[in-house]
Image (tube, rainbow, N blue to C red; front, side):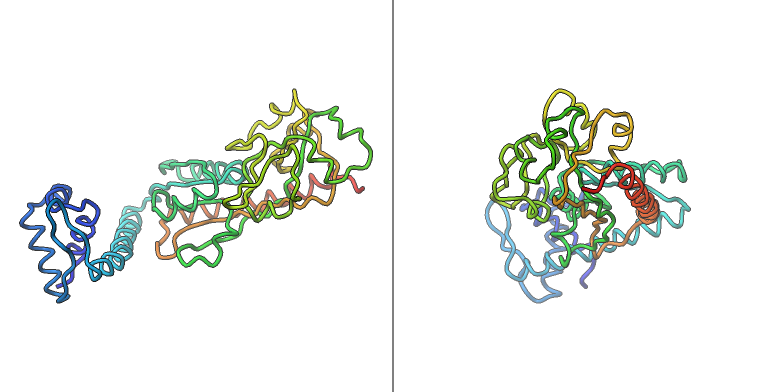
Amino acid sequence: MITQRRLLHLLTLVEYGHFGRAAEALNISQPALSKSIQALEAELDVPLVERKSGGVSLTVFGQVVAERSKPLLTVEDDLRREIRLLNEHQIGSLTLAFGPYPSITCGYAGAARLLARHPGITIGMRVSGWHEVAQQVQARTVDLGIAEISALQGNEHFTTELLGEHEGRLFCRPGHPLLSAGPLTPAMLFDYPWICPRIPGRGSAALPAELGAAGTLDPLNGDFVPAIEIDVPMHLETFLHASDALAIGLLSTMESVLLAGEVALVPVSGLALHAHYGFIYLRNRSLAPAAKAYMDEVRALEAEIRVKERRLAEHFVRPR
Protein backbone atom coordinates (compact mmCIF):
# COMPACT_ATOMS: atom_id res chain seq x y z
CA MET A 1 0.00 0.00 0.00
CA ILE A 2 1.29 3.48 -0.89
CA THR A 3 1.38 5.38 2.39
CA GLN A 4 2.58 8.81 3.44
CA ARG A 5 5.14 7.07 5.65
CA ARG A 6 6.69 5.15 2.77
CA LEU A 7 6.79 8.23 0.58
CA LEU A 8 8.53 10.11 3.39
CA HIS A 9 11.05 7.27 3.63
CA LEU A 10 11.79 7.57 -0.09
CA LEU A 11 12.24 11.35 0.06
CA THR A 12 14.53 11.06 3.08
CA LEU A 13 16.59 8.45 1.25
CA VAL A 14 16.86 10.84 -1.69
CA GLU A 15 17.97 13.64 0.61
CA TYR A 16 20.73 11.64 2.31
CA GLY A 17 21.67 9.36 -0.61
CA HIS A 18 22.50 6.53 1.77
CA PHE A 19 20.37 3.95 3.58
CA GLY A 20 22.32 4.18 6.83
CA ARG A 21 22.23 7.98 7.10
CA ALA A 22 18.58 8.16 6.02
CA ALA A 23 17.57 5.51 8.57
CA GLU A 24 19.37 7.43 11.30
CA ALA A 25 17.57 10.64 10.33
CA LEU A 26 14.22 8.82 10.40
CA ASN A 27 15.09 7.15 13.71
CA ILE A 28 14.43 3.67 12.33
CA SER A 29 16.70 0.73 11.59
CA GLN A 30 18.37 0.36 8.22
CA PRO A 31 16.61 -2.98 7.53
CA ALA A 32 13.26 -1.34 8.31
CA LEU A 33 13.96 1.43 5.83
CA SER A 34 15.09 -1.04 3.17
CA LYS A 35 11.92 -3.09 3.73
CA SER A 36 9.75 0.04 3.41
CA ILE A 37 11.37 1.00 0.08
CA GLN A 38 11.03 -2.56 -1.20
CA ALA A 39 7.33 -2.57 -0.25
CA LEU A 40 6.79 0.67 -2.16
CA GLU A 41 8.58 -0.76 -5.19
CA ALA A 42 6.45 -3.92 -5.00
CA GLU A 43 3.25 -1.85 -4.78
CA LEU A 44 4.20 0.17 -7.88
CA ASP A 45 5.81 -2.82 -9.60
CA VAL A 46 8.83 -0.75 -10.70
CA PRO A 47 12.34 -0.24 -9.29
CA LEU A 48 12.65 3.14 -7.55
CA VAL A 49 16.29 3.17 -6.44
CA GLU A 50 19.56 1.79 -7.73
CA ARG A 51 21.70 0.45 -4.91
CA LYS A 52 25.39 1.21 -5.37
CA SER A 53 28.42 0.86 -3.22
CA GLY A 54 28.57 3.99 -1.09
CA GLY A 55 25.01 5.14 -1.75
CA VAL A 56 21.87 5.04 -3.86
CA SER A 57 20.41 6.92 -6.82
CA LEU A 58 16.89 7.16 -8.18
CA THR A 59 15.71 5.36 -11.27
CA VAL A 60 13.56 7.26 -13.75
CA PHE A 61 10.53 5.81 -11.94
CA GLY A 62 11.91 6.91 -8.59
CA GLN A 63 12.40 10.45 -9.88
CA VAL A 64 8.72 10.67 -10.85
CA VAL A 65 7.52 9.27 -7.52
CA ALA A 66 9.81 11.54 -5.50
CA GLU A 67 8.72 14.65 -7.41
CA ARG A 68 5.01 13.79 -7.07
CA SER A 69 5.38 12.94 -3.38
CA LYS A 70 6.67 16.34 -2.24
CA PRO A 71 3.41 18.28 -2.65
CA LEU A 72 1.38 15.41 -1.16
CA LEU A 73 3.44 15.44 2.03
CA THR A 74 3.56 19.22 2.37
CA VAL A 75 -0.20 19.57 1.87
CA GLU A 76 -0.75 17.11 4.71
CA ASP A 77 1.66 19.05 6.95
CA ASP A 78 -0.10 22.32 6.16
CA LEU A 79 -3.52 20.80 6.82
CA ARG A 80 -2.47 19.35 10.16
CA ARG A 81 -0.93 22.68 11.16
CA GLU A 82 -4.05 24.68 10.36
CA ILE A 83 -6.40 22.22 12.07
CA ARG A 84 -4.18 22.17 15.17
CA LEU A 85 -4.18 25.94 15.41
CA LEU A 86 -7.93 26.19 14.96
CA ASN A 87 -8.56 23.39 17.45
CA GLU A 88 -6.41 25.14 20.05
CA HIS A 89 -8.16 28.48 19.39
CA GLN A 90 -4.83 30.07 18.67
CA ILE A 91 -3.83 32.35 15.86
CA GLY A 92 -0.42 30.67 16.01
CA SER A 93 2.87 31.81 14.53
CA LEU A 94 3.95 33.50 11.33
CA THR A 95 7.16 33.90 9.34
CA LEU A 96 7.42 36.70 6.80
CA ALA A 97 9.85 37.95 4.17
CA PHE A 98 9.74 41.50 2.82
CA GLY A 99 11.28 43.24 -0.13
CA PRO A 100 13.05 46.52 0.72
CA TYR A 101 10.26 49.04 0.06
CA PRO A 102 7.28 47.06 1.41
CA SER A 103 9.24 46.41 4.60
CA ILE A 104 9.01 50.11 5.48
CA THR A 105 5.57 50.82 4.01
CA CYS A 106 3.34 48.00 5.23
CA GLY A 107 5.46 44.99 6.22
CA TYR A 108 6.62 45.83 9.72
CA ALA A 109 3.66 48.11 10.42
CA GLY A 110 1.21 45.32 9.55
CA ALA A 111 3.00 42.97 11.94
CA ALA A 112 2.78 45.60 14.71
CA ARG A 113 -0.96 45.90 14.21
CA LEU A 114 -1.38 42.14 14.20
CA LEU A 115 0.58 41.86 17.44
CA ALA A 116 -1.59 44.53 19.05
CA ARG A 117 -4.70 42.49 18.27
CA HIS A 118 -3.16 39.11 19.11
CA PRO A 119 -0.48 39.56 21.81
CA GLY A 120 0.20 35.82 21.99
CA ILE A 121 1.34 35.48 18.38
CA THR A 122 4.97 34.80 17.49
CA ILE A 123 6.31 36.48 14.34
CA GLY A 124 9.59 36.07 12.48
CA MET A 125 10.48 38.71 9.89
CA ARG A 126 13.34 39.22 7.47
CA VAL A 127 14.14 41.66 4.67
CA SER A 128 15.67 40.40 1.43
CA GLY A 129 15.99 41.34 -2.20
CA TRP A 130 12.82 40.67 -4.13
CA HIS A 131 14.39 37.69 -5.91
CA GLU A 132 15.23 36.09 -2.57
CA VAL A 133 11.74 36.66 -1.11
CA ALA A 134 10.18 34.44 -3.79
CA GLN A 135 12.87 31.82 -3.24
CA GLN A 136 12.17 31.75 0.50
CA VAL A 137 8.44 31.33 -0.12
CA GLN A 138 9.09 28.47 -2.53
CA ALA A 139 11.49 26.80 -0.07
CA ARG A 140 8.80 27.12 2.66
CA THR A 141 11.18 28.89 5.01
CA VAL A 142 8.56 31.65 5.27
CA ASP A 143 4.76 31.51 5.20
CA LEU A 144 4.22 34.67 3.22
CA GLY A 145 6.22 37.23 1.26
CA ILE A 146 5.62 40.85 0.26
CA ALA A 147 7.81 41.92 -2.63
CA GLU A 148 7.92 42.78 -6.33
CA ILE A 149 5.47 40.48 -8.11
CA SER A 150 5.74 41.41 -11.79
CA ALA A 151 8.09 38.53 -12.60
CA LEU A 152 5.92 35.99 -10.74
CA GLN A 153 2.53 36.67 -12.27
CA GLY A 154 1.49 33.61 -14.22
CA ASN A 155 3.98 31.39 -12.38
CA GLU A 156 2.22 28.11 -11.58
CA HIS A 157 3.91 27.77 -8.19
CA PHE A 158 2.75 31.09 -6.69
CA THR A 159 -0.36 33.04 -5.90
CA THR A 160 0.18 36.81 -5.92
CA GLU A 161 -1.97 39.77 -4.94
CA LEU A 162 -1.06 43.32 -5.89
CA LEU A 163 -0.84 45.72 -2.95
CA GLY A 164 1.27 48.77 -3.72
CA GLU A 165 1.73 50.77 -6.92
CA HIS A 166 3.14 53.86 -5.21
CA GLU A 167 5.11 56.39 -7.22
CA GLY A 168 8.81 56.52 -6.47
CA ARG A 169 10.26 60.03 -6.36
CA LEU A 170 13.71 61.55 -6.10
CA PHE A 171 14.82 63.45 -3.00
CA CYS A 172 17.90 65.55 -2.33
CA ARG A 173 19.41 67.78 0.35
CA PRO A 174 18.18 71.35 0.71
CA GLY A 175 20.50 73.58 -1.32
CA HIS A 176 21.22 70.88 -3.91
CA PRO A 177 22.39 72.31 -7.29
CA LEU A 178 19.34 70.83 -9.04
CA LEU A 179 16.98 72.99 -7.00
CA SER A 180 18.38 76.17 -8.52
CA ALA A 181 19.06 74.85 -12.02
CA GLY A 182 15.82 76.09 -13.54
CA PRO A 183 13.48 73.74 -15.42
CA LEU A 184 14.75 70.19 -14.96
CA THR A 185 14.80 67.38 -17.47
CA PRO A 186 15.15 63.68 -16.54
CA ALA A 187 18.58 63.61 -18.22
CA MET A 188 19.96 66.06 -15.65
CA LEU A 189 19.28 63.60 -12.84
CA PHE A 190 21.90 61.16 -14.07
CA ASP A 191 24.76 63.55 -13.32
CA TYR A 192 24.48 62.49 -9.68
CA PRO A 193 24.74 59.15 -7.85
CA TRP A 194 21.45 57.54 -6.81
CA ILE A 195 20.74 55.86 -3.48
CA CYS A 196 18.17 53.05 -3.25
CA PRO A 197 17.80 49.26 -3.21
CA ARG A 198 18.25 47.63 -6.59
CA ILE A 199 15.28 48.12 -8.89
CA PRO A 200 13.88 45.13 -10.83
CA GLY A 201 13.99 44.99 -14.58
CA ARG A 202 10.38 46.08 -14.89
CA GLY A 203 11.22 49.40 -13.23
CA SER A 204 14.59 49.84 -14.88
CA ALA A 205 12.91 49.75 -18.30
CA ALA A 206 11.85 53.35 -17.64
CA LEU A 207 15.49 54.45 -17.38
CA PRO A 208 17.65 55.57 -20.31
CA ALA A 209 20.46 53.49 -21.76
CA GLU A 210 23.08 55.93 -20.48
CA LEU A 211 22.82 56.08 -16.69
CA GLY A 212 25.82 58.32 -16.03
CA ALA A 213 26.68 58.58 -12.34
CA ALA A 214 23.32 57.17 -11.19
CA GLY A 215 24.25 53.49 -11.44
CA THR A 216 24.42 50.55 -13.83
CA LEU A 217 22.23 47.79 -15.23
CA ASP A 218 22.86 44.21 -14.17
CA PRO A 219 23.59 42.35 -17.45
CA LEU A 220 22.17 39.09 -16.03
CA ASN A 221 18.65 40.23 -15.17
CA GLY A 222 18.30 43.89 -16.20
CA ASP A 223 18.02 45.16 -12.62
CA PHE A 224 19.10 48.74 -11.98
CA VAL A 225 22.00 48.72 -9.51
CA PRO A 226 22.34 52.20 -8.00
CA ALA A 227 25.69 53.83 -7.35
CA ILE A 228 24.89 53.56 -3.64
CA GLU A 229 22.96 50.35 -3.04
CA ILE A 230 21.24 49.83 0.31
CA ASP A 231 19.22 46.87 1.58
CA VAL A 232 16.46 48.84 3.29
CA PRO A 233 15.53 52.42 2.29
CA MET A 234 15.49 53.86 5.81
CA HIS A 235 17.16 57.04 7.08
CA LEU A 236 17.89 58.16 3.55
CA GLU A 237 18.30 61.73 4.78
CA THR A 238 21.56 60.77 6.52
CA PHE A 239 23.06 59.96 3.11
CA LEU A 240 21.81 63.20 1.57
CA HIS A 241 22.99 65.73 4.17
CA ALA A 242 26.65 65.78 3.14
CA SER A 243 26.46 64.85 -0.54
CA ASP A 244 24.78 65.66 -3.83
CA ALA A 245 23.40 62.14 -4.16
CA LEU A 246 19.73 61.60 -4.99
CA ALA A 247 17.60 59.11 -3.09
CA ILE A 248 14.57 57.23 -4.42
CA GLY A 249 11.74 57.08 -1.91
CA LEU A 250 8.01 57.43 -1.40
CA LEU A 251 6.26 60.56 -0.19
CA SER A 252 4.66 58.60 2.65
CA THR A 253 7.96 57.27 3.97
CA MET A 254 9.72 60.65 3.62
CA GLU A 255 6.89 62.71 5.08
CA SER A 256 8.49 63.63 8.42
CA VAL A 257 11.84 64.77 6.97
CA LEU A 258 10.09 66.66 4.17
CA LEU A 259 7.94 68.57 6.67
CA ALA A 260 11.02 69.23 8.83
CA GLY A 261 12.89 70.67 5.84
CA GLU A 262 15.66 68.07 6.17
CA VAL A 263 15.24 66.88 2.58
CA ALA A 264 13.69 68.33 -0.56
CA LEU A 265 11.68 66.81 -3.37
CA VAL A 266 13.43 67.04 -6.73
CA PRO A 267 10.94 68.93 -8.96
CA VAL A 268 11.08 66.83 -12.11
CA SER A 269 8.43 65.10 -14.18
CA GLY A 270 8.63 62.44 -16.83
CA LEU A 271 10.45 59.82 -14.76
CA ALA A 272 8.17 56.80 -14.25
CA LEU A 273 9.30 54.85 -11.20
CA HIS A 274 6.55 52.86 -9.50
CA ALA A 275 6.56 50.25 -6.78
CA HIS A 276 4.68 47.12 -7.82
CA TYR A 277 4.71 44.82 -4.83
CA GLY A 278 2.23 42.39 -3.36
CA PHE A 279 1.63 39.21 -1.40
CA ILE A 280 3.47 36.07 -2.51
CA TYR A 281 2.54 32.61 -1.28
CA LEU A 282 2.51 29.08 -2.59
CA ARG A 283 -0.48 28.12 -4.70
CA ASN A 284 -0.76 24.63 -3.21
CA ARG A 285 -0.16 25.60 0.43
CA SER A 286 -3.06 26.57 2.68
CA LEU A 287 -2.63 29.81 4.58
CA ALA A 288 -2.65 29.58 8.37
CA PRO A 289 -5.01 31.80 10.39
CA ALA A 290 -2.10 34.06 11.36
CA ALA A 291 -1.22 34.70 7.71
CA LYS A 292 -4.83 35.54 6.81
CA ALA A 293 -5.14 37.92 9.76
CA TYR A 294 -1.87 39.60 8.83
CA MET A 295 -2.98 40.04 5.22
CA ASP A 296 -6.12 41.84 6.39
CA GLU A 297 -4.01 44.26 8.44
CA VAL A 298 -1.71 44.96 5.48
CA ARG A 299 -4.60 45.56 3.08
CA ALA A 300 -6.04 48.13 5.49
CA LEU A 301 -2.64 49.79 5.83
CA GLU A 302 -2.16 50.01 2.09
CA ALA A 303 -5.53 51.74 1.71
CA GLU A 304 -4.39 54.31 4.28
CA ILE A 305 -1.06 54.77 2.51
CA ARG A 306 -2.79 55.48 -0.80
CA VAL A 307 -4.85 58.22 0.83
CA LYS A 308 -1.72 59.68 2.46
CA GLU A 309 0.20 59.62 -0.83
CA ARG A 310 -2.53 61.60 -2.57
CA ARG A 311 -2.61 64.16 0.24
CA LEU A 312 1.17 64.59 0.26
CA ALA A 313 1.29 64.91 -3.54
CA GLU A 314 -1.19 67.77 -3.37
CA HIS A 315 1.02 69.50 -0.80
CA PHE A 316 4.54 68.90 -2.15
CA VAL A 317 4.25 68.29 -5.89
CA ARG A 318 4.01 71.53 -7.83
CA PRO A 319 2.72 71.57 -11.42
CA ARG A 320 5.54 72.33 -13.85
